[in-house]
Length: 369
Image (cartoon, rainbow, N blue to C red; front, side, top):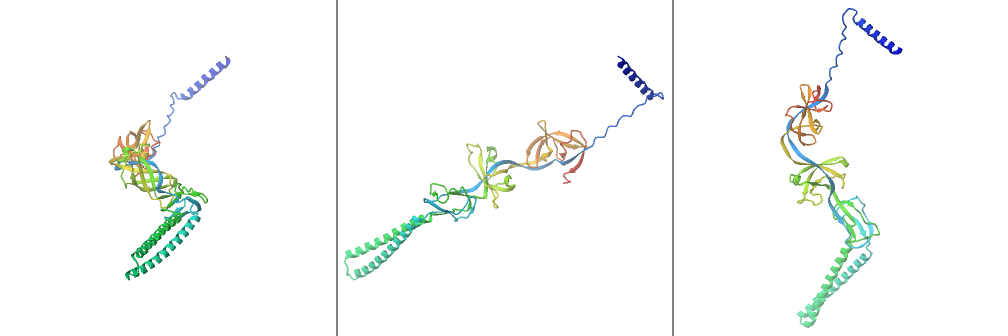
């Protein structure tokens, strides 16, 4: 109780002391109000909204494939004697790829060559005999039967020679097929043979793929496919090799794929350096039309707030917030359908730091860049 009384006295004493200090001259002293600091303008960059012919485009993801793929198999069966290429190796048309063992084939070839030589000698003998018989017949020195017999023997020798030539051609063809060459230039892929293994027409030994040009295969929906054309230029980016190239549409499927429910499209791209490999992911930017006299701003000028598109416009030194309707968007332009007029200065940098009605200071415009 005593502590409460003492505290009350101290409070009253302090109040009287302060009152006396403030009223020594009989007047009340008024303390000056604290001045509020002036708001610092936010630095921003602005560009004018302009009207241009805006190209419409769609970005689609596809896969790089070879422009051609040839399966190579031995035309005759046999054991692999040598393999002259490796997977991933470039080859030219006619280059030797692998060989099969040729022991039996070489013997058959020699036999047929010997047989052909014998038939040639036999034919020459019969031709000489026919010449002699013909002279005797002219002198009426032989019978008609002997003449006919000589003629038949000559024809038989000629037929036997022809038969030997055909047999030799067949054996030579088989012998040459033991050495398998590249039917076209490209890169060796899926090498499935080794020395000592069996090879033949039933098994693919390797594939030769052509990656120059390479092809990007992708799918177009039915509402887009009618807006592209064969030979149309397309910008293609391959992120894996940090490369962007311009290709051309080389094929558009005439009917929809039942699985993807889209139209397969092929885009041919140059790959002289060979950096682009089959299976890489590619992004194609395909032009689908043009919007005449579109009002556009840079995409970074448009903000999304509470599900609405908004921009800030410079008006009398302050940021004015506008709700806008957005149309087409490309890599560097966004179409504005409503809420903005051509020529108005739109904030493109610093717009995330300002609020409606806040003072701003323009530090850069499109003329400065």
